[in-house]
Length: 205
Image (cartoon, rainbow, N blue to C red):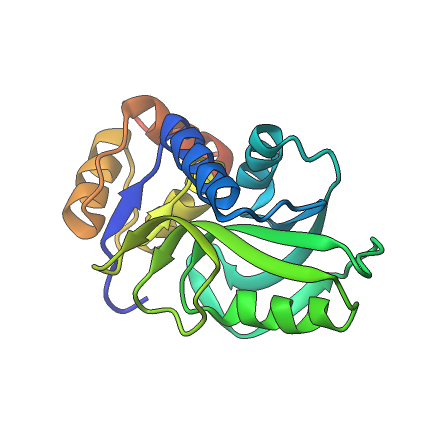
């Protein structure tokens, strides 16, 4: 990654608030999904919370790959395809972020072949860079930033640290460089978790 991206760390409480806002937006629209499809992996948590708010018990998922850690792949791959019957049903797709729009566009085209009665999309964040406008958004962002959700903290921060040269040997150094390079402040506990689960290295405090 040539130029480190500016990042935003999202907390679990913010995820819950954004999921609630997304559910409110869907409810206000009059759309009543019968089935929710979570986009794996980022859509799992928000989809479940949205289901809770909207009293939807029918939840399934599709595993889609477009990013590996912080690296974007050349094409969208539907790794684990749909196993549910959605013909004639009101379907809502939920993901965490709509970045380029490639993932949701490919998924919407794919699901359309199963002939749902209606198909809508919803996300926590939609960036101005997208080429595919989703139906329901909790929050829109103008300035591009890499959004780090709580379910991807170890993966994303671990990738950032692994790319540093020389690699940090202690938590304080890693935290300082994450702030300088990516604009994020990481707690000592979180940084310790990153090092613990990256490999067997035990950095100094």
